[in-house]
Structures are given as structure tokens and as C-alpha cells.
Amino acid sequence: MMKPVFMTYTKKDLINLAVCMVLSVLVIPTFITTEYWYTSILIPWLCLALATIGQQIVMGYTGQLALGAAGFMAAGAFAMFNLILRVPDLGFVGSLIVSGLIAAAFGILFGLPSLKVRGIYLMVATLASQFFIIWMIDKFGWFKNYDSSGIITAQDIVILGKPFTTPLAMYFVCLAVTTVLTLLAMNMARGSTGRNWMAVRDMDIAAESMGVSLLRTKVQAFAISAFYCGVAGALFAFCYLKSLEPVAFDIKLSFKILFMCILGGLGTINGAFIGAAFILLFPVLLNAIGNNVFHGAIDATIISSIEQVIFGGLMIIFMIYEPLGMAKLWENIKQKFKTKFPTMNVKNLTSSIGKKS
Amino acid sequence: MAIERKFKIGKPILEVKNISLSFGGVKAITDTSFDVLEHEVRAIIGPNGAGKSSMLNCINGIYKPQQGTVSFKGKEIPNITPNLMAQMGLSRTFQNLALFKRMSVLDNILVGRKLHTKTNFLEVAFQLPKVKKEEKINRERSEEIISFLEIEDIKDTPVGKLPYGLQKKVELGRALATDSSVILLDEPMAGMNVEEKRDMCRFILKVNDELGTTMVLIEHDMGVVMDISDRVVVLDYGKVIGDGTPDEVRSNQKVIDAYLGVEH
Image 1: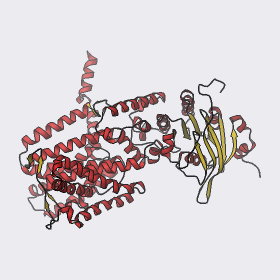
Image 2 (image 1 turned 90 degrees about the horizontal axis):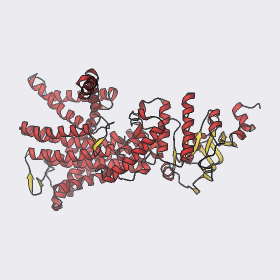
Image 3 (image 1 turned 120 degrees about the vertical axis):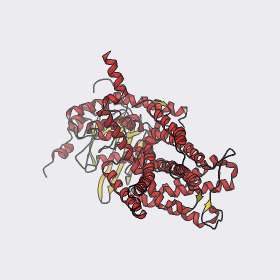
């Protein structure tokens, strides 16, 4: 195991982080100029990856089968709308944090069943959050500021007096929030907090006998998870949809996040990004194939059906052959590459040179 | 046991009084009482189904006995939970291994340091200086235990991939990491070969000797039990049929009958 250099990050992590930052801050804005990429791919990718991290915390790390991430996202999004509307002094960042906290409160409430039920039954119990939150927003007009049209336009993002309205600016807002929260999640996952989560996941009786409180750990995981989903939901509504409607946060979105979590790799933070990218880009890829290879000969509805079939198939394949998902697959490929071409490894190269001389 | 001990056997630290436990109509334990003295190695033996593991589960709070009380460190504990007992300084291992399978050996042992971890999740998220300090202390203690148990070479391996004997060692390590005053060992040597058993005995005695940890263990291997324990309690059909030093128990007619069978 490598020694951490800064916080919980090893040298390798910092190099990876630097590469990601250079890519996302310098390379992407320089080379990608089409708005479509920002508004339809990069921004939703960051938002959904953030929500997937939330799902990872409760499902991948703490082992609680929860389904209802979109409910918490809706809570975050509508909390954000109301905060900016009613408490303008909070500012964008302040509102974002508070709406995350409001979602976390819902997380605590709907996480309580996890103390009594587990597995598939818990999944059914957590579905309540999905339906209850959406119902609540629909039922009480106050949440939508008594707007009768059903779709409310999201307010413009203003941080420290500066408007962030262009796709590129919004992309940077999402990027900043996602980066900070991802780093915090990594700290938690690798520290004592994450160990408690995983202990509860792997063997709850033993965890309890070591002094890990099941109540506190599970509720904490649900709260943190909902916080991440809430913030992600607020960003999703304000940067991607630019509107607020409860229908956008339906159960389909919850399932999408669940798939991202499983395909990406349960119990990994980077898996959240891989999974989200895959699920978002795959339909785009299929469409491109449909348009360019078959020149539109295949009906769009058939393509979207094929998409469902392939997702379903992939889920089954991953569950059977690689339950740890694409993140693990990537690790395995790297490992294979290293063993096949040992000289490619810089460390080996330098050490073998050192021996000869 | 003639050698002078650093930690002299003292007053009772754990007392079990009139415990009765039944699952539906099945009586697992009936009106059982015994005590464990500070710094001693206490064995619980008995044929299969005698209620030994159930007894440990009652002490640890996983099962709630219908009758009887458990006193720990001079205090009677009304609502026992595993968590409460851990906080009071009682740790344990499990019969069928209850390790965190996907976590590394080091991480498993670090979970044992939970009660010595006071920082909350926000402090961990922001990696405040006190988190680092605490983590450093916990890691050092865990490394000490790892080298004590001679498992340095596997410390980064996920425990699920380890052979049975090593997993048992890791579980002992996790219990040790809590720095508890009493450790309950549920069949620490089950399924081990002679060499592994000898190793495990050595560790148990070494812990008892160097740290003064009180050990309560369930074991089937009579040779082992008689060698390492100070006192033995024998259970049969959920009742105590013998209690005393290994020699006393060995010559107890009821115990001989229970183990060898008796003509009716």
C-alpha cells in the first residue's frame, strides 16, 4: 500500500487528480467549443456522477440497498429553488449547501427503516422516499411558488454578483462542486468513517461487537448519501434542465443512478464517474451508429429499445462476471498490461538499469 | 503454570448468574452461573450443542437471556447490547468467522480501533490535524498487533482471500486492537492443524501474560484446554456439570460421563 502524501491521497492519486484537472479545466474548454457537449453531456455527467457517489456511499460502501436517489435529488432541487426565491441572502453556494442539508434530513427519515429491514425489503421501503417527496412537491403549491404551469424556470446562477449563465460557466460551476465533494467523499471512504461503513456492509454483528453503532453508521450513510444527491439534484435542475418539474426526478432516474452505481463498480468512487459516463454516452453512441452506419434505416424507437436490451444484458453480465464493475475491469486491464509488458513499467525499468550498473 | 505471572489473578471481572435462554421450546441454557477472574484464562467446554456459543452470545449481548444477569467489572448490566459491552471493554471473536471480507487485514484490525477513534465524519472529510494524529496512533497500534501475530506479509490482502487459519488470526488481532480487558474467543482453534493450534495457544498465552487480558475461550481440543487454561467450566445440555481447575475437572465423574458416555 502506498503512503498518503496529502490528506488521504497517495502520489498516484495526486497525479491522477492533476491529469483530470488539466483535462477538465484546460483541455476540454479549449478543444470542445460546441455547446451541445456542455449542455447535453458534460454537465449532466458531472451532476449524475455526484448523485452516483451518493448512491455509492449508501449502497456500495454501507451495503444498504436503497432506491430513491432521484427523490432526494428532487428535494435538493426544489429546496434550492425556494431558498434562492425566499432567502436570497444565502447566495448560490450557501443555498446549495443548505439544500443538500434539507435532502440529508429526508435521508435520515427514510434511512430509518434500514435498522429493521434489509436487502430487497429495504429497497422497497426506500422507494417511499421516491414517491413521497415527489408527491409532496406536487401536492403543496408552496414548493412551486404556486406556479400553475407545472414547469418552473430555474433562476439564473449568480455567484458573488457574477452571473454564470453560459454553458461553459455552468460547466465550471458543476466541475468545482463535483471536485470538492468527490475529494471529501474519498477522504471519508478511506478514513475511519469509510471503515465503519464497510464493516457494517461486510458483517454487521461483528461491527457492532467492535463498538460500531449500526444506528449511527447507517443513518449517517443515508444522510451523507442524500446530501450528495440533494446537491446533485440542485445542480441538475439549475445547470442542466434549467427548469424544475417533479416529473424529471421520477423513478427512472433513480434506476439510472442505480445502474451507474452497479456498472461503475460498487464501493468505488471513480466507478461513479465511469458508470455515469457509460450510461450517458452509450445512447449517444448508439444514435450515432444508427445515423451514420445505417443512415437512419433503423427507427429511433428501435434504437432506444436496443439500448434498454443492452443495458439489461450488461447488468446481468457484470453481476455474474465482475460484480465490482467497470472500475475493477479497468484495474484488471492495467494489471494484465503490467504483467505482460513488465518493461513498460517505469519503476521496473529504472530498477533493472540500477542493477546492471 | 508455576512461573510467576506479571498480572496476578484477581477478583471476578465477569459474573454470569442464573442465566436461562430458550429458543421457542428449545432450552439452550438452563440456570447457569459461573464467574471469570481478572487476568485468568477461562475455558468453557462441553459436547456439541451444550450451549457454549449461546453462553458467549448472552455475555456479549447478541442473545437476550429470558432469565439471569450478567455483571461486568462489578456492575450488573440490565440492557446488554454488543455495542455497550464493547464500550465497557469486552471484545470477542466468532465461531464461524465474522471478518469484513472485502477489507484488507490492516483495515479489519483498524475497525477494532473504533472505540479509540473519537473524530466524526466531518472532521474525517476535511482531514483535520487531529484526525491525522488519531489515525497515526491507530495505525501504529494496528501494525504492532500485526507484527505481534506475525502476519506482516499479508496485511494488505483482502481477508476473504486468506486461508482459514490466517483468518482466525486476523480475528484475534481485531479483538486485540480494541485493547479490551476481556476477550471472548469462540473456538479460536477449530479447523486448525497441530502447528497452527500451537501458534494460536502461544498467542493467547502471550496476550494474557504480557497485556493481562482476561481470556474466555470455547475449545474442543481437550489437550489444548487443559494446557492453557487456569480454570474450566463444563456445560452439558445447557447446565454446568463441572467447574474448577483442569485437574479437578478431569477427575469429575459427571464430566467423564458426559464425554465418554455412560451406561444406563
